[in-house]
Image (tube, rainbow, N blue to C red; front, side, top):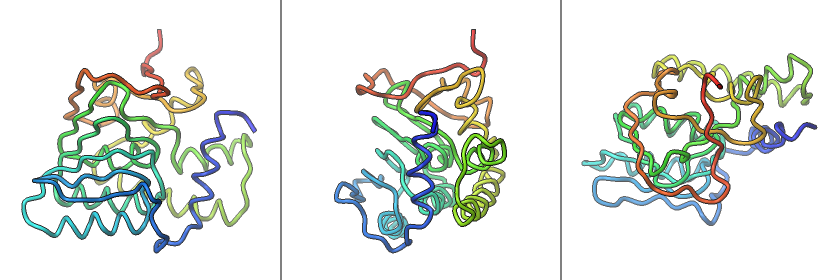
Amino acid sequence: MPRRLIHLLPLLLALAAPAHAQPSPSATVERTGDAIVFRGRIEGTAAAKFRELLREPGVGRLVITSHGGLVDAALDMAEAVADHALDVEVPQACLSSCANYVFPAGRKKRLGHARAVGWHGNMAHVLYLQQTGQASWSEPEIESARRLERREQAFFRRIGVDGFVCWFGKIAPHNVDEFYSLTAPDMARFGISDVTVGDGTPAAGAPELIAVDPP
């Protein structure tokens, strides 16, 4: 299987994980001042803790560091972010389902550095790969992908974002192997607005920064 598809395998394997699965040891969700600080993998228990803390008064921000996780759980979080008009801050990394759903759901978005958000595909991309014969998954996996694709498309319509932002960098002329980032102006072309970028230093292995219109 081509290298650019490797990251989609965990994405599909996650489809069958139960919503009540225990969080990874690195997943922490806590209230700090007017912010909920989320660190770690997005899954059912951690997303439920986030929604529980949102019931407390005075929450205005989500500060998140996550390499992604379960699609349903990430959409649960994203819908709650949109419902409560939270600002989203990404000090270092928001990748995969965090980038696809949680980050664009924010009212205002603040990045610690220019490569803090990284995309590598979504459910629409999975279905595209199956339809074009570039990958092949089982019928139960594809049925799960279809269900999630309907949910993600409904969410993107709600927040006014073009979901193609999640996977255009994986196809020609870009053909990015792993994760990619975008500048704030290029994010705005897909409907992701109100993004400010700090001058922090990306960690080693941060996503590749690409342009919508390559030179």
